[in-house]
Length: 258
View: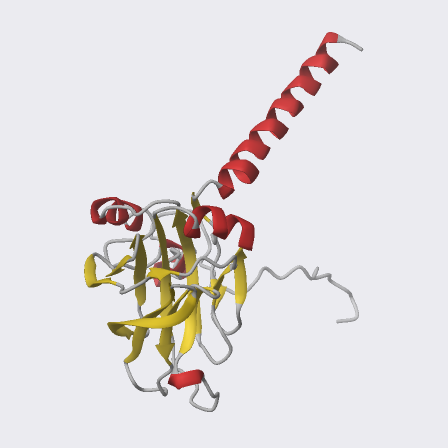
């Protein structure tokens, strides 16, 4: 094998190793963006497997889950337990839930429901949250430190509560969306520790513009506008205005019989 071929094989091997480290090993290390594309909320979608969820969000003393949500009109024809359905959840552990509101209402009720363990007996503890506005992007972060939960909307802590019992640790996947919901989600980010509000804000600002709009939902139209001036030939320049009729390509010939 030639030296050039060996070099090419070495480069390919390095690239494969880099990909495995960054996108496979590091992706499950608890500090990553696990949803990089706009995803509808109209159906439940698992975005983190139960084994990685267990090691990054449940096993340690603290954790952080955050993402960008844009809720649209709800659907009252679908039945939900207690009038709420899950927006994002670690199934069997904690659930960020909303009560779908009809089209026309500009916000929806929300709560964080946590399944806790009291001497082996499972209980449900609830943290009431402010309503979540609709038709706009909202950054929501759930910070856990032991049995204390802090919830952030955009750049403000809107709820902070210490539960009576510790959250149950049951191997489950992290999922977003549910039947009957309407809207989009992107950039769900997980950490295997409780971040400080300053660290959360630093993460939030990476993905939004000055209007708190997610960058992927604010693409700039690079197409050129149709300027009327282009339809005319500027005076003094040797060109034909595009409004002139096309050149006549027919040949005119003379005949003595005409």
